[in-house]
Amino acid sequence: MSKIFSLKLARQTAEAFLKEEGLLSLPVDPFAIAASRDIVVEGKPENTEGVSGMLLRHGNNFGIVYATHIQSPGFQRFSISHELGHYFLPGHVDQVIKNGVHVSRAGFATNDPYELEADHFAAGLLMPEKPFREALDGFGHGLEAIDQMADLCITSRTATAIRYAELSDSAVAVIVSTRGVIDYCFMSDAMKSLPKLDWIRKGTPLPSGTETAALAADPDRVVGGDRAVDEVDVRDWLGGPTRAIVCEEALGLGSYGRVLTVLTSGTIGQEGEADEDSDDEEALVESWTPRFRR
Image (cartoon, rainbow, N blue to C red; front, side):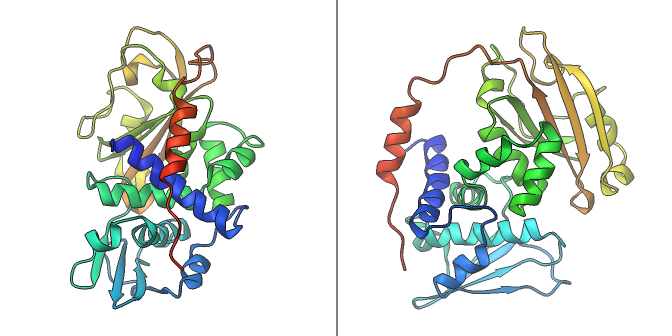
C-alpha cells in the first residue's frame, strides 16, 4: 500500500466512523467519542512537558493521557484524536503499544507511518470533508478562512491549515517552519498542477527576502503571534517556469516557536482537469474502510 493511499485511508476511516455514529456536524467532540468506547481520558499535569499524548492498555481496557502544558484546546483535542487513531486504525494497537503504553508526538512532523496515519485520522475525525467543505464555502480565503474554520472545528491553526490545503479547490500551499528552517509543506491539487515544481523539502531554509523569512528571524515576533502579508511570485517559493502572483501570509505560532505560511492564488490550476483516477481511488478506499470496535 502506498504512503499516500494509507494516509487517505486513515482520514476516510475516521469519516466512516463519524457517519456510522451519526456524528455529521461540526465541531466533533473527541472526549465524547472516547467515552463511548469506555476509554478514560485524563490530562497530564501542566508542569509536565514532552509527548503530546499517550495511549495506555491494560487487558481490554484503554486510557488516553494528553498534554496540558500547551494551553490550546485545539492542540489537546487533536492529541486525543491522534490516540483514538491508534485505537481505531487496524493493526495499530498491536504495533504501537509496548508494555501497555504508547507515547505520541502528534503534529505531522514525523516519518513514522503509524504516527502519520494517526495524525491523518485525527484530521479526518475533527475536520470531516463534507461538513468542512460546506462551512468553508461561507468563509474567505487564506488565513482568514483558516482562522474561521479553526474556531468552528476547535482545532489548531496548523492542523486546520493543512486540512484547508487538502480540501480547497483553490491553489494553496501551507508551510510550517522552525527558526528559519522548513519542517513540512502541504499543497492543494490546484497548486500541485504547476509544472516543474521545485518541491519544498524538510530541512531547507526559508526563501530569503520573503516576509516569512523576516518574521522567522525575529523570535519576539514569532512568540508574539505577529502576522505578515505580501504578494510574491510563486517561483520565489516553488520554483518552476510559471510566473504567477500569490498571496503570502505568515503567522507566528507563539510558544511553539514555529511560523505558519499560507500561499494562495485564485487563478493557478483553475483550468486543469480533475484527476481521472480520483473516482476509482475513492471506491478503493471505501472498500478498504473497516468496521469499528465497540
